[in-house]
Length: 186
Image (cartoon, rainbow, N blue to C red):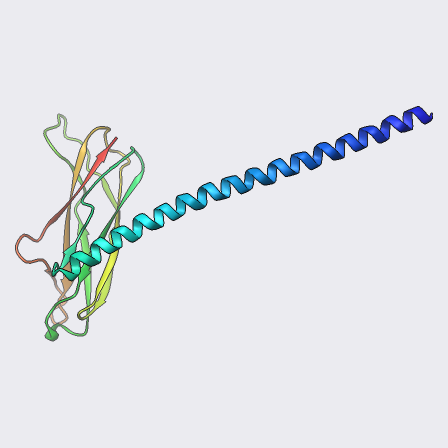
């Protein structure tokens, strides 16, 4: 009887030791994963701050609208995000705050394709209010679902402002009112 009791205690001790090792390994793996994703977020934030500084630099140099990264390559089915900066340098008779609209036509395939390829859908394009002599950065998002691999799509980006008197949208750019953003699907 004593021998059975001793084996039961040995089994319990072995179980406890294995549980401690398992918890230690599980905890260290959580720590490792957390550090990995933390570094990935830091790299993303640095990329975003680089883009933001490029936009600010372009706006300070006198551009009304700035799209620093006009071409991106991404996998099929993933959304692609573009940053755009707008500087409000409208005259004072347009009011102290102006509403700007970022309009994007559905992105069409570049080149001749038979049959014609469907356009990429714009998921998000904002309307933003900007104070006089101020600037803001906004994002617009294009969905690559329904696109084709190894095809480049062109998105026409148009920034307009709402006229405070008539309420109509007017082109904000000088000269050619359309900017281009390109999405290449891998």
